Length: 252
Length: 252
DNA sequence: CGGCGGCTTGAAGGACGTCAAGATTAGTGG
DNA sequence: CCACTAATCTTGACGTCCTTCAAGCCGCCG
Image (cartoon, rainbow over all chains, first blue to last red; front, side, top):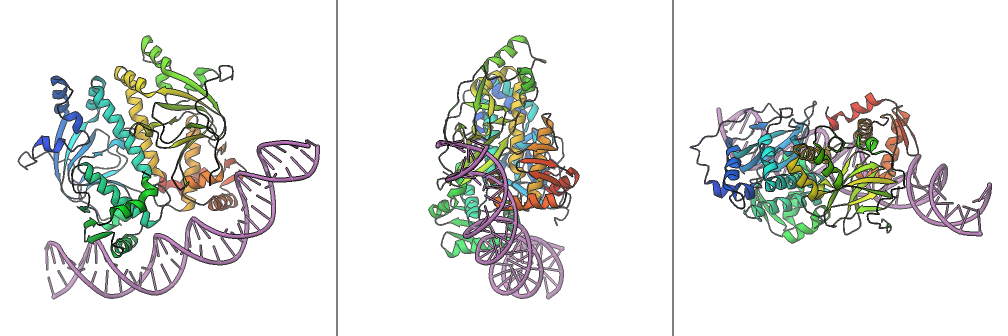
């Protein structure tokens, strides 16, 4: 099904690509609170910054890593969106999740010591790359980093379980939209207007629906005045109602 | 739907309950390799054993913890089976997973700092209880423990994602049986004959099926000579074929 | 322009859920 | 040990939600 995508591994970071000021990026990142000065002594912070490597840009379809690659690093998304997915031997793809700016990628690779999935850029992506062995070593000296790693890992367990339940198409679509909104909001972006960086097919796959069903539910939501969709641009018009529909999934 | 279950919190361990020799239990446990002497210096091992508390027995329907309880400890199952599940405000239950002897419970609670689910004993259950703050502190001194925690957490992310995909009833049932067999085998139990400690309804719920469908698939598998079911006792007769059916889910 | 991929929309079919009834077992108390 | 009830499990008939198939639309790019 999936055509042969271009494979490009870890381009070295282009310092001239205008990647913005560090402080601005880091303040929205899942690791930001440990990367930014605050409670850590100078040499410790120095060590942390030493093991962070800026990589990118990646472009649509580029692979950050592929299933089976030896595990070495975890990544924080600085800009763009990353899709993680598995592809079985019959070529059927399964979209595990989408990673927005400020979120981590690769945490599920620690145990098998190999990446258990592909990570693909959905648009232009910039990352921070953390060598995991170095990070783990540092974590023994800096309890704050260890804590943060434990939290991030534990949170990912719950995320994976979220959409695993037995819900209908509307509930899943509503939950998907609300989750996106909340995640954007948590990083300081608009919670009501955003652009879907993934094609309908990827949304469908991730929610275990047919692409046609995603289309139909979008239309129904729009007819009900819940959202406004135009191509990949979405505006949430009635988040209260959407949240109500998704409550059985988000349960809070 | 679910009748009011008896709530019994953390009975203190009864030292006279004949809980077997420690070495035997610990050698099959997910934490065993760090609990047992091997590579650790004496005082470190001493610390570890100090923070392990044996609890149990719990009986059918007893709660180890409930959703919303403040997170304090993670648990290793020493004997019996534990079910984790959420119950939404409409009373609909969602079974997140089953935890066999040697496996951990509570890892998904680190992040929210509250247990995000109930943990219920499906039969007579004995546990090791680890205070998580104490464990985390110890982990800063003992890299082996930190590593093991990272691995356990990371592995749980993958487990949660396993059954999240879009598969039919037969594929999910086959995967469920194979996974059980592998997990029993990993702990030294028989991989071909075991007892399902959970009712059909819980299996169904966990696999997002109706209980009737579970019944029908069991029957079909038996008619095809793949398994032999009698009540809750299962014998796998053709693991190769079952594994083939489940390959799209287990993909390895 | 023409071709291609992504998206939408409609009609038909299937896999599984729901409903209902019966079978088997477990639990309880006499 | 046996009756009695409740729970669990099985089996069949029917309905439904979603998928599948097919066709048409739109924007993009060579």
